[in-house]
Length: 338
Ligand SMILES: Nc1nc2c(c(=O)[nH]1)N[C@H]1C(S)=C(S)[C@@H](COP(=O)(O)O)O[C@H]1N2
Ligand SMILES: [Mo]
Image 1 (cartoon, rainbow, N blue to C red):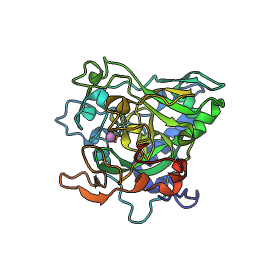
Image 2 (image 1 turned 135 degrees about the vertical axis):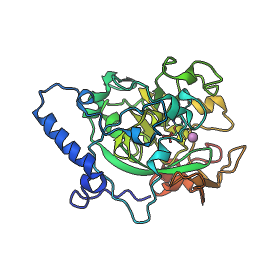
Image 3 (image 1 turned 60 degrees about the vertical axis):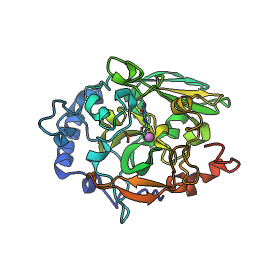
């Protein structure tokens, strides 16, 4: 896929942001400029631009407020079909909140994502526990429109907002022993019903863990997402911060991250632990390597979110990103290192 960073002159935020939200944000930025220093961004952001609107008013759950973000937008290519936001934030896999596709949206609305801290440890010169807000200060946000291909053979096209993971990782100065990067999701059974027993949590031994080879983690396509559709992530999509590795099956894109470790060894990964013959460490999207129980040759592309909106499209090698990432796997047998 083509990642084209638009010149500042080509596209402004106002072009892609709902005018009312844009005006409101302008007002807010002015207010912020006038505010005293030391105010935490999370506390200062307005709660008015939230996602509750798409819920039926008969729904008891109130959607967690989502804040508009400031970021460098990606130009929309002609013919680019983006999955409807309401679909992408209501059809989820997040087993910590239950195993049905609508469990996360129904069970995660009260998930507390602030305050949030992330531990950085392992083979790096700089390690420690960092406030999420301080991590955000180290990077600048940009939009990336990526296909997301789940191993279950459905896919979406999602406009993420985030930063290249490598930009953050470099700042901790990984040592020469750092050959892999491991990630962990929060453990909090009180908030996450899937962690209370094996039945509700799909048999996963929590925390959900994932990992990448360091060159995969440093690859410019690998994104740490903090938002989607111009706003902060809703909890069901992995707020406040989740990985997006667009050439790999969706399960690599671990949500609600609380720990990033530089390791000398290949770290254990959740789905590989659960079913090693079905899910490998690499999990590169590959139409020629079938899952033992189903073909990966095609996928259901979910776009408008309508009940019958399910286009069958052929699956592409590395999910269409072969031009950018195939070289990472030059000497590997992709059917063995699946
Ligand atoms: N912690 C955690 N991360 C997770 C999962 C999960 O169950 N728990 N599911 C994965 C799977 S299988 C997919 S397809 C994507 C789905 O992301 P989405 O719900 O934002 O589309 O999240 C991945 N990240
Ligand atoms: Mo998935």
